[in-house]
Amino acid sequence: MAGKFQKTSMYIDQNPVIIENGDFRKNVDDDGRPKRTGTWMTASAHIITAVIGSGVLSLAWAIAQLGWVAGPAVLMAFSFITYFTATLLADCYRSPDPVSGKRNYTYMDVVRANLGGRKVQLCGLAQYSNLVGVTIGYTITASISMVAVKRSNCFHKHGHHVKCHTSNNPFMIIFACIQLFLSQIQNFHKLWWLSIVAAIMSFAYSSIGLGLSLAKVISGPHARTSLTGGTVGIDVSASEKVWKTFQAIGDIAFAYAYSTVLVEIQDTLKSPPAENKAMKRATSIGITTTTVFYVLCGCVGYAAFGNDAPGNFLTGFGFYEPFWLVDVANICIAIHLIGAYQVFCQPIFGFVESSCAQWWPESEFINGEYPINIPFCGQFCVNSFRLVWRTAYVVMTAILAMLFPFFNDFLGLLGAASFWPLTVYFPIEMYIARTKMAKFTFTWTWMKILSWVCLVISLIAAAASIQGLATDVKKYKPFHTEQ
Image (cartoon, rainbow, N blue to C red; front, side):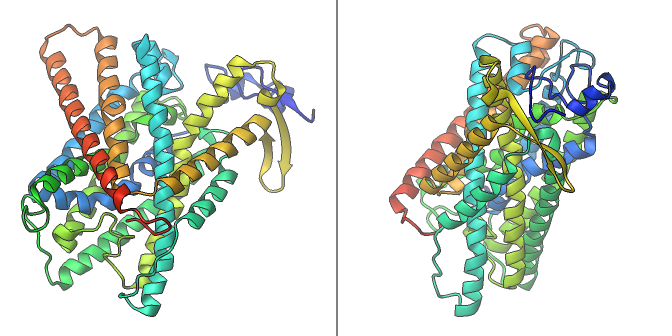
């Protein structure tokens, strides 16, 4: 076998073993790419890994801002909207026919096939800006969880009155070093095992947080809660109430966001059954599971802490004991975010690498693959451009995370900025275009109303998050953990 080989297409990852055996057609799908092996179960794991993330940690705080009435109602509303638009997007993976049409490999490809024009560039800007932001956010959150383990042990040893300040930066560097290694995984198709591990971790820390909150509620004393959340004049001023309410809506929007990677997840599915059918089943399972966890964690967390709920109820030290259980939960968060980081950065890697392969098809640096045999793991292909570019990306996100270590407001801004265009606007517009729906019919009207309402929500949530970030910048003390 040759010591190196070169990709002849950005769509076909050729495997020399397959070609030499003359069995190429049996090992590829209808588009010439290696045969997909994903199922609704692996897709569900990818969705849960993407959805149950750092957002769940801020839900008790979000419910505290909205209260017992609006809080659960907003959670359920966003879960329904996300599920509904995800099913619309799942039907766009193939076009024009959702079962037998041409495959679209990325969100931009889907928009290009169904809408075209400048909307393709707008989609790319929204999607990849959000993906970069999410990877920065996950670097911040993972470091906060790692710091929380060290601080928890410090509190247990020296008492709760000690400040135990610790810099986040060394832990961001540790997280980045792990990602340097994992980022060399070639594509989404090879991430299934990491997503399953990450999904298990998300269930673990969510269950621990839920259990600790429930124990706090049962043991008493009861925290002060209300139907409308924080009380003006007691907990917050009138202006703070407005801003925090809008910011809480942004946090909840981010907690359900996974449309940025939905098409890439669907592209891992084998058929039959049809990819859109399998994806809808995975979406139903993923959204239902996460909604149950979100409502439980948010509501029980609010019952436990009341209107003083911390922004992150595991790292904000609403709980000090049992310290070892809090440590386990934070370790699970860090492990989960290691996998979630990969789920969100792989589409970025794929976009840049396929674009460069198109621009410089003859470049050996960009397209050359060097197979290496790794004991017990089989063959692994090293690509020079992939090694350099992905390493640079991980380093960049780590540096930006060190310069921008704010948690809740960052979550709200990400959710508000991406929720409307990627989760609502494009799926609805593509459905209308694909079905050639007549204007001003009943379905067209209520879909447009839903889109405009979500746009207003996104704008006010973004404004609140920017206001919160401005406040945090004034309070920020370098090298201290921000909660």
